[in-house]
Image (cartoon, rainbow, N blue to C red; front, side, top):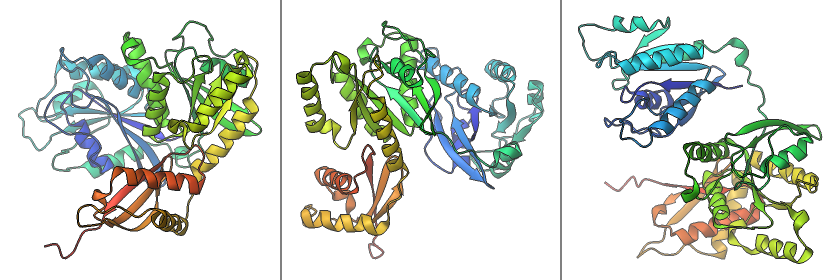
Length: 436
């Protein structure tokens, strides 16, 4: 299991700056405005055959006028709960605030490994850093994220806290996120798969508030199913708990290997279904469409739904199946598709094959001129998985129109036959050495 390390602290102490230095990225926004980090940022960091998942949380205790305060708090508490190591970040320049003391108390109660990170040591103060000893944390380190002081030492300290048996990471189970609007039958479907009433199943929409993980074995293969809360239309999501559950559902999708999007056969493809599919596609995770409650359909209505699944552009490249969770029908077919899509998720594609497909695409449809110039694609290669990123190198690629980009994605989707897998293009324009 990968060790999760979370940066925790009040606003404006420099958590995002430290995150950026450790992750060597600019994925977290850095600013002097308090409370800028609204969401959780994550990065995977490796050193000496060890791997950590670094998490940057929003600051505790933002302004009273901040509508996001409760959500930031919820995410920070969640990060503490899910972490094995906590980096408690404080500000030497500011000193100790009542909020620091309260956060320290919360962290102590978690009984997790803690490293006290004293930031902004480049600023001279009368008290020095000894004032932070009152928190009672044995492990501490002084850094300056702005001047990159002791950041490498912090990284070494973090990895030294990882137990030796965590070096050899276990092969993680494929994570399958089950999503859909309330009362579509997500929990019932998982209950049918495991053939037991492990989860609460109810006809009242919104029973599942949080995500629930269930390990499932099928034909000698193990999976981790994540049953998420139902996602309502935005104007219907009124309670704080429901807002949190919607975010949790979308986070579960982002962290999953595969999303099963369930649709109701009796109220097929409503607006919120479309938006959910679009969001899952944007996240880039593999997708399977599952139509539940088909035991209540006659042949004509089932044929109409199947026709929509085959012709509506929103389903292009997505496999589908019909099930009845109530009668435990269609589950074998569902697992056959799950196996096939997960194999596609892991698939490596040779550079030769990708460039051969590119040539065929350009023979079928040339890149349109943009003014007097035509963008030129030189070569492509695989740049990532789930989504499968095809990195495109060339000249003036920023001038390629959106319609041609969509043509390329659809062409690759068809030729590669990556059923259920999202394909995205990443364009890298070559620099002209003679430009100056």
